Image (cartoon, rainbow, N blue to C red):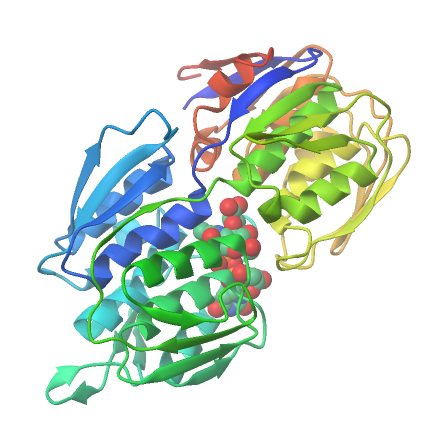
Length: 431
Ligand code: EPZ
């Protein structure tokens, strides 16, 4: 397994190109199931999860071809075509490797009238139930059956063809994935659908924009109430994936923790407002320029009190990275994780580098002015891994991050991008 070695202490300076958003790509790709015409996505990030999703789509008879990107695209261009679906089953051995596979459930039952998907297990940050996905699909006509570790969704027959009816569902808890799944099912339902308390994350907006480009009828995009008019069929489209707001936020923390200055090229300030506001409150300067956001830490960092929340609140996917950064703040910060029940796996690893963090339930008190010392540490989940990288950039001496396959799921060419702005970082082969 690869490891990443960092010798800390360098101030980062320069430009980092922000890749296409992982959490958008993973909900845009299953839209290829909704049409028999080609769907071309540009600016796809080069990530393990994107490759895995391509293999999953191949299972259903969707062809996937990678084309050369344009100079303006940092990412890849992939054309997918599900002219004739040959299966509606997502097998355990693929789903267990990538939880986002559950996002084929909605489009499959929307297109083919039925879908059988292995239940995704939990993961390091929580047990990740899918009850809201299933309740929302039932509300628009799907019959749900759970058996032998699989979930089967079947649409009622209308004129002999399986077709969802449409309906109304109010989410008791904001759920990004459940909103995405039911959206991709509702767009080809017989009737209309109203979703209340829907997720408003930028990735949902990206998904709605793609579906509209494919001929869907959706109003209320960007709000918590979405109204969808079902269409008999959708057509193909060409669409550019939005920039990754979490990757950009992670590198902003790298500038802050090393006292450096980075231009985040292609980042969208609108998608990152809560992150940028928190950085400014911590004393970091943020300049929104034409093609980039410039983040510079030219003074001491101030401690913060932050709670994670659904968009437009402070993103849970930024919590671990801010925790690392706040270790260098001039005082104690208080972080509260309200979304996932076990998202402090980075704490014991940061402690091995000299951090002093007290966790009580969902709240972590992060003591500042830490003198971090490099150490061998273990990545446990995607964003926790990034917090270890950030701490390593500021630590004295060598930090060796193990199990970096976690990182490769969400950060494209991480060590190259950091080397390019002055970090002393390299990837080592099998340890
Ligand atoms: C998406 O996960 C993201 N993943 C996560 O990013 C992100 O942290 C999360 O949204 C919140 O923003 C992708 O987009 C691939 P949720 P998702 O459904 O959809 C509970 C990363 O690091 N819930 O919004 O699984 C759930 O347990 C990853 O890039 C139910 O109870 O998140 C959680 O407490 C990590 N029942 C809360 O809702 C359900 O049916 C929010 O989960 C679904 C969710």
